[in-house]
Length: 42
Length: 549
Image 1 (cartoon, rainbow over the protein chains, first blue to last red):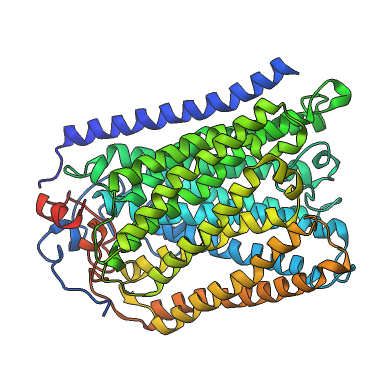
Image 2: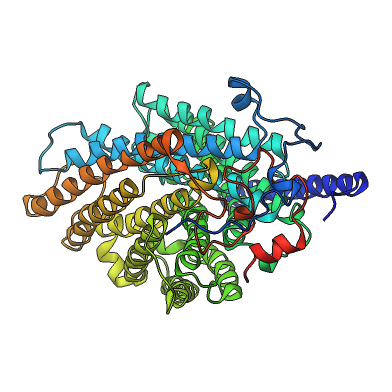
């Protein structure tokens, strides 16, 4: 199994960054959503 | 008899044993010298080691607090500490053990093992990994420093229910900030795990043939990403109620204290599975190895883990049956809670079926795994008892609950961590530990953990309330037995760091495969593994040899 080409490596890096950002946004959404829900209820 | 044959990638694969002559994200070099290696660490093994050391330190600090609790409860009456300090100890013990010991230990094991198991050179986001770890010492210094501020450390229990928790002194905002930091660390660590598993698997390592430790961690990471922000939201609102005049949870201002309980347990119940799912992964690695058989029902194990994770989101209110919820709510949460026993039962039966007619040997990792199997199941059964509403009305806030969750978390999560450490330690440091001492560690732990926690079932059923430093004389005998068990268990844990230290210092060299029945990519690497694990993806032959499903 040969090593990855630079283009493949770059693609993998970009994909990793995108996944991380998406998951960060999901976490942030949960944080905000629960506070908003509580504001709406109280 | 544990030493295995040598048919590893040793010498045949550059990724396994090379001199790090390659280039990638985190440098084409070995470790930096001195403190820089640790402060600026981006290597998954270094960071994993730091997580594990941190968890070990917190385990002993939290354990010391448990000793204070059990010393006070050794006999009725107030002997050693003030009631307020006693309650600070129960609160801090829980926070330290959950967020400081068990969770960082899992993250440490994830850091060490996931890249090696999926054929990756490192975690996907090494700098984020460094940041995730280094948040923790600050968070726990802040949390522990609340012991020295006016009003003392939080004493309202780790659940931080208002209005009680809002009566705390200067320690409250410090504890809340510490919880935010711990949450941030966990979320960032989880993001790294997901990104690594989804993006860094070597070609040929598919989702349905990667080790179950990776699977259980992948699902745990999703749970963490979804629930830690909920806890952060709850404590943020607690903070604004206390300092900024809001009334989220204050009945006098139109708020609802029970709403806090709902939000807290929406985080809190999945948190239980965050603590235990990685344990399921480790047990699923160890039982096949020492039974010398493939895992029974790999796919079913994956689906069962996912089912448990899903169900963990719809059972939260079983922690709060006594708030007088509607009958329909009681029935729903009882039934959904009982439903969890189905996928959990699938796991227990699959581990048992894996051992069936296997050629079982009883090295320390297997001993801890077997103890996990028996004792975690006891914790599961007492959980079923607590799921029944009328019974829960009797058991709620008694020592029965304390016995239940300690059976799940100590011979459950903690024993699984120890099983994992004894399983992979020879791989990590290239040396074999003292088996005799490790066996002593196991037997002392297994005996004393039962002496410690089993009598607490009787105390709870007899009506002894939790979080109270004094008790009626009718509870004296079993409390004394429980405290003796606690001291024995606490002392026997000192063996663990000694065994590890002795192993590193003077252990005999271990082989690459270490255990005769071990399968997985980590065993295809040298012992100890190279600084960067798989600088080139493992070949199809290595993957075929390593993967057994």
